[in-house]
Image (cartoon, rainbow, N blue to C red; front, side):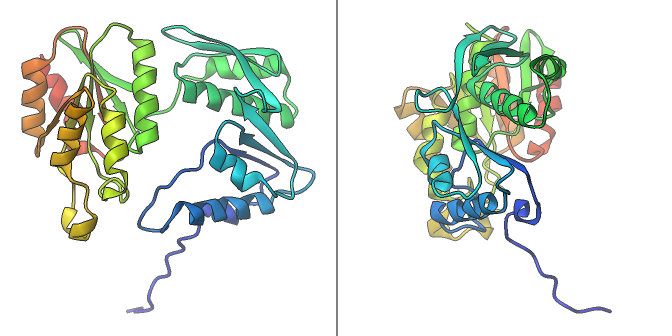
Length: 298
């Protein structure tokens, strides 16, 4: 038997690539089991930009200071993309509908069959990179129009008794905030539920205790589930779910900490009404709650 210890490469995997074109849309603290600070994450992005050749290009979110910081002394050509006046490639003429978003990028019109600011930013970055690769504006528009999205990003899992249940991978506070905004644009007038499972190595810790409350309070109803494998996190570093639910209420939302799936389903079944939207947010399977909830709501 080979007893040689396995080596786990904790470096960012993009450092193994040789990219000609790089997109940096956001830089935030995450992966608390690997990185000790935001500065360490910035360093790994600086290293990424250092391997882009001078014949290549880095497209940087010009509205986000952390992105600007990592690109400040990049040796490759840098193009800032965003809504701000200082961006060299501007997103303008933004128009949201319930089922799509339209915008211009550098004066060229585009449209994507998705809602929310983060989807517009993603589409704009994709259009910029595709232009760099030699595609025409018409080819890019056709590509965006054919894009249906990806699994686990506001993916409709079903509807029961007039209540729609969505699945979303969002678990970082910023991602939760943007997901809530997007769902409100898609479903104006609907009450929004968020069922959140703090499962990642970062959200099980107290590092985002305040930020999670602020993002979840943007929903009409927020349910915080039990924290998996909490014993693996040092006691003084753990997220406090009871405090999280009380902070949600303090910020104007309705929040509950419910420790098991059955209790969560019972709460939604008790209070949800036809027309409500239920978003299940987790970077895991959440115990198959989506289909169990839909069955219960029938």
